[in-house]
Length: 297
Ligand SMILES: Nc1ncnc2c1ncn2[C@@H]1O[C@H](COP(=O)(O)OP(=O)(O)O)[C@@H](O)[C@H]1O
Ligand SMILES: [Mg+2]
Image (cartoon, rainbow, N blue to C red):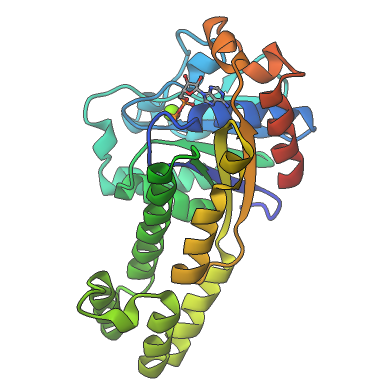
């Protein structure tokens, strides 16, 4: 992988919070800033990224790759009206959401080989292994939520699931750590493992090297919490709920919060089959999106 290339996963455990809208428009905002971007629809099973770009019948889709009709993922990048922006359109084959492990590994390898400054992954809802594994390879995540409490709590438990899966994969040959991770799942029985700090204290006693590498994994996890559809000041501050939980329970202190305001232009643009950032470049949504893109550079 080139050093400069960044794979960014756009995730959110709930459907309808704006993942696809943000993926598409962020891709455009970054390409407007002169970056080479590929946006990939990985919402296996409910793909719709292409419709935001007004593509009714994409020439290629992810199925073509999954079903081995093409050799590599780079063969199915569709052009858009923007020179430095390509998209990989979602597939639509029954059962694709339960992608088997080998196919997933092949897909992950091919994603890492795509050329560009930014590869954006528009992921499905939920915290299935498929979704979580793509976030793990991405190394950077935009965590999309709306300001309501259930949505905020969902994002936190999603991150927790992701961290535990990551640690389980990393330490699968380290029985003592795996045992500790198992115990941490039941924190009523093991209140001393309720926080990552507690977990690390015990991990250190078992295996100093392992505990150091866990700390590193937590430090390296870059996440931006995006609170979408903000209507008030209170909404704008709601992301702090996730930020505090992540810091208190998971020892992740590096997350930042951005906000995107509620904007009717989003719906109007969808009806016109045009991305909102092109349809209404002066809109609240476009302004907020451009800020997020600039800060990502
Ligand atoms: N900032 C916003 N203002 C108004 N409507 C929005 C905003 N963000 C998303 N939406 C609307 O929310 C709906 C769901 O968005 P979508 O991107 O498809 O969500 P997801 O991919 O998370 O399922 C769409 O109808 C979209 O137009
Ligand atoms: Mg979506």
